[in-house]
Length: 118
Image 1: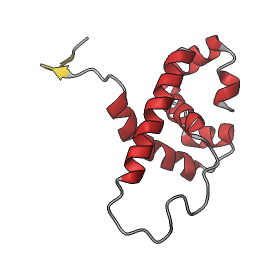
Image 2 (image 1 turned 90 degrees about the horizontal axis):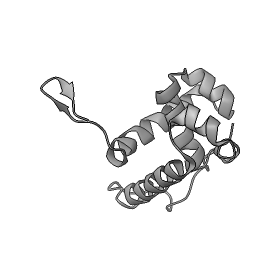
Image 3 (image 1 turned 90 degrees about the vertical axis):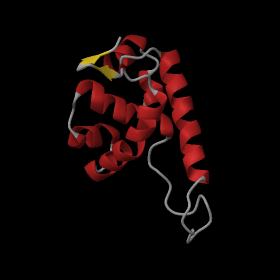
């Protein structure tokens, strides 16, 4: 499964993610910006130059799609691994990496008096 292919079918993108193509693109842009910021603020000493090491199998757009499918459709990491041709441990890493970023960039309802504000 690829985000570029799914974006061509607006109804499927909306059903799978709850977002329009424009909203999805905006979210991907915000996540990319946060990833760049977090990359440049790494405090520990590097063993290799930035950008060294093995490259990711999925681009940021597809990684965002993985976590959106995980939370929206409540599918297992094993199924996501199958759909994106990844090991389920890699799916777990993507979710772990992007979850705090999504919390920062998405408007999340705030709980007040035991109820979520609208």
